[in-house]
Length: 123
Image (cartoon, rainbow, N blue to C red; front, side):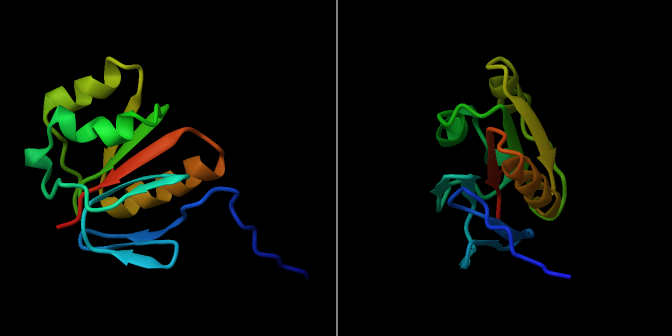
């Protein structure tokens, strides 16, 4: 049987993520970040879900995603209602999950060429 590695046609691939670090392409990130298939915003200034405000979403929402994924660390923790409303009032679907689940979901949606942006909070 012949196997070939399928390379994505986008710039950034999320290899793994947990509550403390993530691997994007061949780089290990240890600070919170925002990711789309073609954009990486490193050193996102959010380190806890409780401090997340609507203004913190600007770099993600500027990408005009159809789906916004929020990875909240080791555990799923819902953000303040204003953050959820900021997405929903713009017609953007928001999914909140732990970082490992967010990474898997991001990769599936990016692989389907969906307009997806994810933000990962790292402790």
